[in-house]
Image (cartoon, rainbow over all chains, first blue to last red):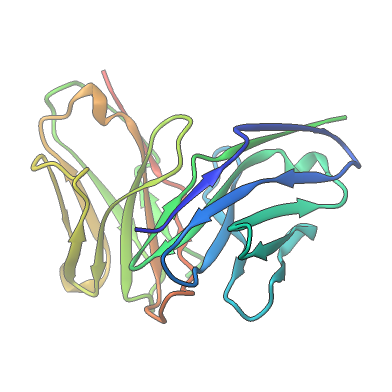
Length: 111
Length: 115
């Protein structure tokens, strides 16, 4: 079975500073990886997905993630945090036919 | 069709009662999934349908849980004899079957509270 581990349960950043959310994966084959965001009282929204076409993946709202096979990592970054980025973020691996979610990272943005 | 819709958004029930949730997927999607999310955790897979066929069930889905997808359109998830441990957010998602890179679209969920 495929799985992911999110290394931080909570990340707090100041507005305008970089955000880094860490994720390691475990997979017996080349994985498909995703980052989803969940805002309060809203559904899960896809930020970006890795499909083996390129190791650096750009997503919505200025987020990007880099797939590193040697480190089995898929960390999510954003150069400059905005107040609207405060949310729960999930690293996800495709474990066909379903998705396997990490435990989530709560992002807090300080003004 | 603007996305996956779930009804109700919130449900409070007494222990021992039965509850039923509904999910309407994106109309052209042939796969439909149910997940459960408890506080502080990521969603956990419960079951999925390919059209009207239920193809996989998680061991989390006890015999008190049943899901249906008649005619391959909307789906219902029923929980019989609810227990306090059933309190959670129940999420529905749908997708097109295009392999490993398929994006799943999620509804806003039904929050169940068993008192």
